[in-house]
Image (cartoon, rainbow, N blue to C red; front, side, top):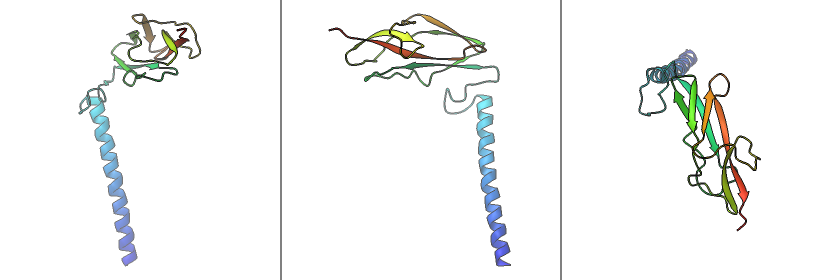
Length: 138
């Protein structure tokens, strides 16, 4: 009889833990869908929002931050226009920054500070821009 009670108690404990996890998951989903929470960007999405991702990769840099947040951009339309950022604080010893490219091996930039990139949700909802560096001749 004691084994049955212990087994039953163990089963109840397991079910209780599962229900707590499920309750937490439902609460988090509800907060996400309702747009509430302590994080301004974590729960911003609404059912009609589009999320685009633009990542700036330092491509061999040895100083500075190449991340631009987590790269997420929110839009209520299926098109997003990004104004390309500049070098900011990126640096690479012995190299000069030329701009950005979608090819990590490029020696010429496709985009420079102030250019615009248009992302279409159905075609290209994300892009990685790699820093273009050329050897410093000085």
